[in-house]
Amino acid sequence: MSVVVKHGSPKPSFDIKHIRENPDLYTKTCIDRNYLAQKDHPQRIIQLFNTWTQSRIDAKGLRWQNKQIQKKLGSLVQKERDRPGSTINEKKELLSQAANLEPKLTRIDSTEAELNEEIDSLATELPNLTSQETPIGKEPRLLGYINERPQLYNRAHHGDIGNDLNLLDFAAASTTSGWGWYFLKNQGALLEQALIQYALSVALKHGFSVVTPPSMVYSHIASACGFQPRDQGGEQQSYMISQRDTLEVEHEGKPELTLAGTAEIPFAGMKANTAIEENELPLQIVGASRCYRAEAGARGVDTKGLYRVHEFTKVEMFAWTTKGKEGAAFESMLAVQQEILQSLGLYCRIMEMPSTDLGASAVRKVDIEAFFPARLAKGDGFGEVTSASICTDYQTRRLDTRVKLKSSAKKTEFPYTVNGTALAVPRVLAALLEHGWNQEPKIGPGVEEEMSIEIPEKSLQNQKHY
Image 1 (cartoon, rainbow, N blue to C red):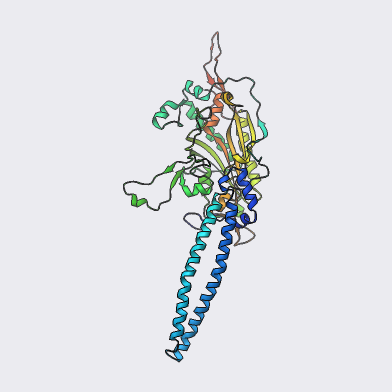
Image 2 (tube, one colour):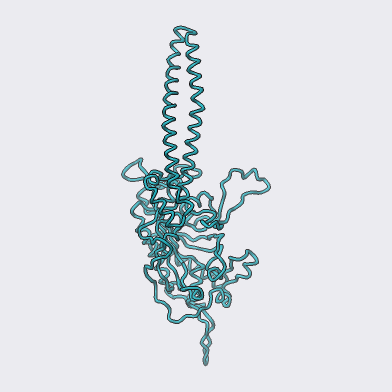
């Protein structure tokens, strides 16, 4: 059983020694992943550590002096008893020496705390290392395909299809919420629920346990998972929640809240400040949640319709594993993703994503991109529908999540985390609309077929034909 070892904000535990011993590796990682503002952090950490080490040496000498003074003062007690008044001058001198040492020791303690704080701050900003499977640069590597490319297809956009069939309403949402929101209506809303249930059922079959997470998290939890309020380009990523009201004093000192951009964040936070028993691992969970993204992309083919929106439903997988077992969890998630997309009849390609596309926490990321006929207007027609990432101990070190090893009652280590999309509803729904669109109904003697969408029967038995 997992045990909460402490409450409050998790205290990060960085592997500063590894950074100091491999500064070139971390600098190269920053350059490869376009974290150019952080590329000098490893050398700066070494400089600060050397200063901290010298401070510790200085403090050791001063503390030794202080200890000797305390010993001498202790020896004066008996001397004063034997000869009252004989130790006044000596005691006065020793107390003066102690008084002179005290501010020096205080300054050193303060300096060491500041150095540690700056070292941790710099380490926080460093991205995770990059796996050997990851292509360096900007170009992904093709790993394979799912299903056959459709021979005949139209290029109708899912937004137009959804409007024609009364499944989507962007105009009303722009009035209630603004650009980037939408209403799912009628069979569109039912299809969302069917997709959620189907994705959960596949994940359950693969050994995942279902958890429903909160949509709101503390900002420091999101940050520990590698999600910052702004991206490397300075663009707003997250919706921050204000707790202020007319009684502002009530909320002073309360941690800042944010709407989660993915269930990965609250899932990872479930085990913050917690020690997990080794026999519980791998611990694999899956859940549906609403997700919120302040950044919905530049206007254009990517942002028309459901492809990039501010709020959406996603079924997310998450796992904690021991070091060395993360690959199996990763392959399990990829198997879930491929089974879902294959059964939905979507033509997809599987891509090993390059270093510049990895988030701060990931060492490796594989995306699956579905074919959207309407996107051929601006490219090859493919767009991401799922993603899976290995994050090693990046998140657990920042969240103070540990695993209690069976080999030792006291020894713990940081487990590895893996996450993956089981199904992002808007994008899969959009792909289904464009793939299955029957724009030209058959009309003949005694036969009339309305415009419709075909959904593969074996995956969604009750939602196959609209």
